[in-house]
Length: 368
Ligand code: UD1
Image (cartoon, rainbow, N blue to C red; front, side):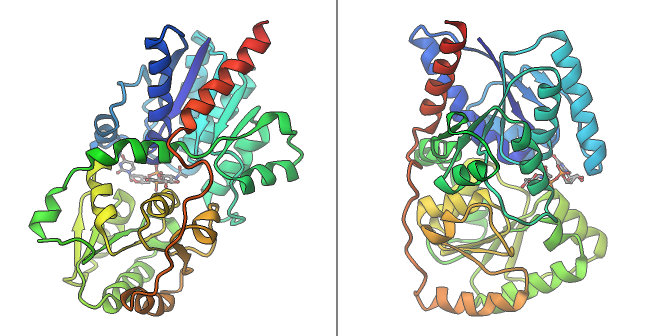
């Protein structure tokens, strides 16, 4: 059996790393599953890609499609052309895509048209916000996926509502949390810790990269101002995504001295900071899952989430994109009234084992 494992952008790497680890663990026990790790090249900077391979102990990709940046259509087309060429040379038995980035959708479409079955890890989640490219990617990918590995019962229900039959939906938990729990003992103090004299629970971590929040400089500047004005002089550590960096640089924006802008951090360094932070302010989806598992208060600057369990069970609160919502939330945090939260079912560090077990059985059945 040959599996294609597709990665392209930063949040993909932590979702695939534990799947590879499980395949290799089984190989060491004598059960061979072959895989081809395909990097689309959507993210290419060391800070957005290479450092994650090192931090997560991932092997070098077998293939890099070098698609690079571009418009949504240009990037999608580049990835599809590259992957189509690869599939023309050799087809796998199954193409496994993860998450909701452009690489996920582009490779799923290409595989399916070349008659390769598709499995989607993190299938079924929905924000309902069609202005997000990720939501379009999720819906398109799931409309042609054969096997769904879901992170929550809500995701499984979303798929059933679309007519997906039970035998193709597997609620297995969250591979991103496999990586978090596996890596936690190795979290590593990043340079900014000593540079800024940080102390546990006395600073806030900030990340922003959604087009809605960062593409308009006036809006971004207003958000950053509200965040620093309401955070009571606590240091704010802000690892800046390249997209956001570009807007700050090109607009000549000045930011408050309580904000420390850093380059994007590696996985181990970033999560060292998050684990010890008083809170995180973000517009990422994945980070809300990690803060939920580590019990760190999280404020999400979005109007919707595709991960509702981080709000209903976890430590996350949706503040929306209106900067006025930040001050009252910060008040709640600083007066020690943030909710405690619990960990969602099956976010237990063993999801990849369940996935590989299911895939093996599916293929045993097919070849029997
Ligand atoms: C992508 C994902 C998003 C994910 C995010 C995490 C899509 C639609 N979006 O958004 O879901 O949360 O990754 O980072 O797939 N750039 C660099 N170096 C890089 C990569 C990007 O400088 O290594 C710059 C380029 O100018 C590029 C811009 O960042 O145009 C945006 O990159 P892109 O991959 O298009 O989307 P992200 O905003 O990173």
